[in-house]
Length: 157
Length: 157
Image (cartoon, rainbow over all chains, first blue to last red; front, side, top):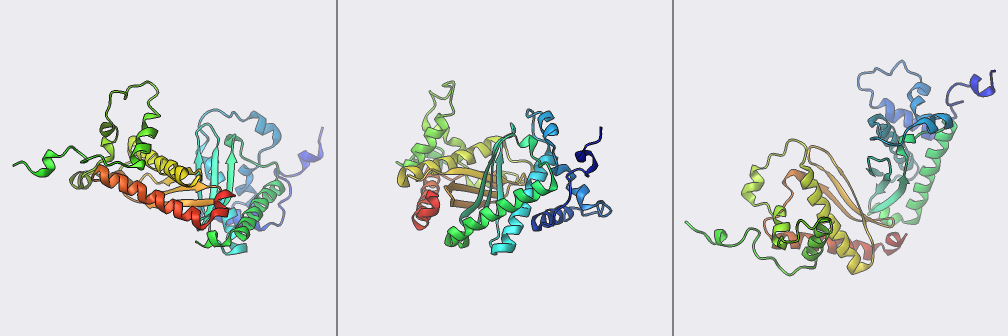
């Protein structure tokens, strides 16, 4: 039986999104040897997609895969760039992730923690669709911008 | 030839210091099996002492020793406790240390980065004397308390 979901490409339609554009650019920035030049954007982002069935199948024991931690880092790097574009505040990323998959990720501007995210089951980091990935990034960048607006002096300190 | 320095115990006199007391207590808190019960405080802190001659002899290549990173963590943990005692602000530690020995260590209270320290040559972390260790900890706790006083709302957020 063929369902609608089978006919859509994996991750669904790629929405127009500032966040996705920045995420793609931070990933392409690491392609020093041009190996990914022929790759479509949807291929570069493919590993950010995890369907609910896949999510359930991912074991949450064992050290998180370095490639996964790399994707988490690029995700927050793109949020930092979007924040900078919208507010001018430059943010540095720090994380403390236990090998069992829980931890905390922060973005810091000046003296201000503009984003603080406690994570668990980091092994299962991923999004159902490109639209969900874009929304998650945009929402976090918006929260960060709100925090900068709330404590502008600390962000500039 | 016997010099004055040869006659003093390693690390010199142990000064009365709230910071040193807290540092000793965070170290003893990890002694689950009571192995260190017979150890003097000066023995517990002995590895925080690095003389200038020793410092020069420490290679700054290779991954930093896990025991050293543990000492760095305890040092900032004691600063966080001293800050809490003096201001009521509880601080969490995060660090990002490159295996080449440079990086950044922060203490975060609420939304505020109360302490931000860029480190390099972490391989050589240590102090000439107990007095220097105490002073360094007290000075950083004082800076952190000043930052809390400057941005009290962000620290409570």
